[in-house]
Image (cartoon, rainbow, N blue to C red; front, side, top):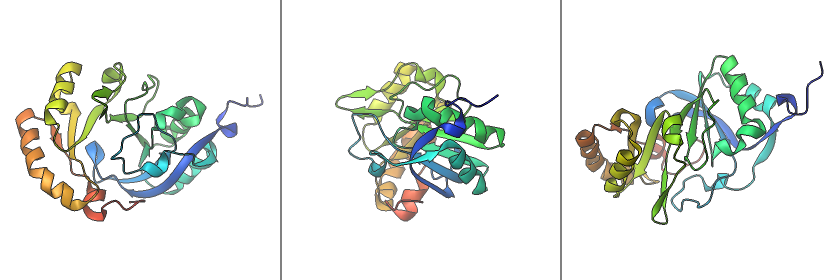
Length: 219
C-alpha cells in the first residue's frame, strides 16, 4: 500500500541545529548525547534565553533525514530541545520519536510547559516552567505528563517553592539550577542554591556547558 502524505517520508521539521555533545544539566547530566534543536517558541519569550537563535525559522529537514543523522552520531541518548520543540509534535516530531525509539535510543525532551505535552509521547519529558510578567506560563495538565521539573533560578526561590506546592510536585521530581550565561555567575549562585535544595530535598544540578564554555553555542 502506498504511503500517505502524512507518513514520515513526506514530513519535515523546522530545525535550528543538530550536534553531538554532553548533556550538561538535569537528570541525564554528564551523558553523551545527540542534540536536535527545533525552531520556534511560544510567547512571551524569555529575555534571559541563551538560545534566541532558535526563536525564528530554521531549516526544513525531512524527518527521515533527521532520524538517520541522529542515529549516525552514535549516541544512545538524543535530546530534543528548542525553542519549544513540542510545537512540532503533530507535524513530524511524533514520527521522529517513533523512529528513534525503534532504533533503541532514549529520547529526552526539553519543554517550557507552555504547550500541552502529548499524552502519547514515550520520551522522557523535562519541563522548565517560565515565570514572566508576574505569573507562571504553564499548562496545568503538564504536572501529570512531565517526568521532572527543572527551574533555572537566581533569587526567586520562594516562587519556586510556591509552584511546587501548588502543583503538588514531589521533591524528587524537581531540579534546581543556577541562572547565568557565564561560569562565574553559576559559581556565585551555586552555594545558596545548594542549601535551598538541601532544605527542600530538591535535586541540584549545575549547567556544565555554561560552567565550562560560558554562552558558546554547539556545546
